[in-house]
Amino acid sequence: MNNDRPIVQLLEENELNISQLYALYAQKIPAKQAFWEQISQEEIAHAAAFKNDTADIDLTQSIEETKFSRGIVQYVMDFVLQEVERAQKDPISHFDALQTALRIERSMLEKKCFDIFTPTNTTIKELFQRMNTDTEKHIDILMKELKKQ
Image 1: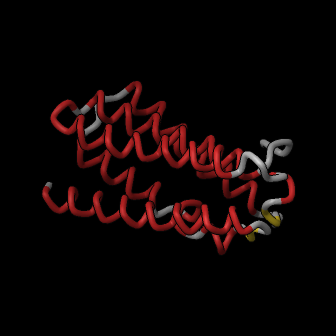
Image 2: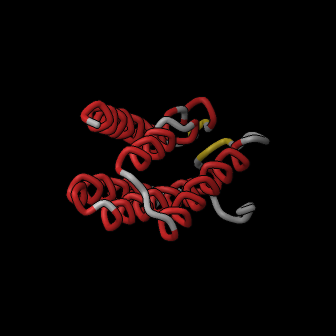
């Protein structure tokens, strides 16, 4: 497990992994390429926010860790990476991609940052609030698209 890196860096990496998954969906589902590319770009922006907004912060002290926090991050990261691998190998329908994306966006990591992690820094708290707002937006977009199917 990534015990040597601050949680914030792991969250940034996870956003990039999610972006990669959505970019694969854009390649694999040409009829919905613009849809998936847009969401992928937003995940890249999330990763950039983690990197840029925390540049001047001691990341080792930015979040109080619990005995579960790293395990939860790793669990979600593993799931996303499994889905990336699956999307690389297998055909995928837009419907299945939407369901997987909803599962990720609704995951404990994305929606319950404040329940899992306790930020000790105002910048991190504000960043988590923005991520939660953006995640809610993604869930709404994904649900509307799913209802069209």
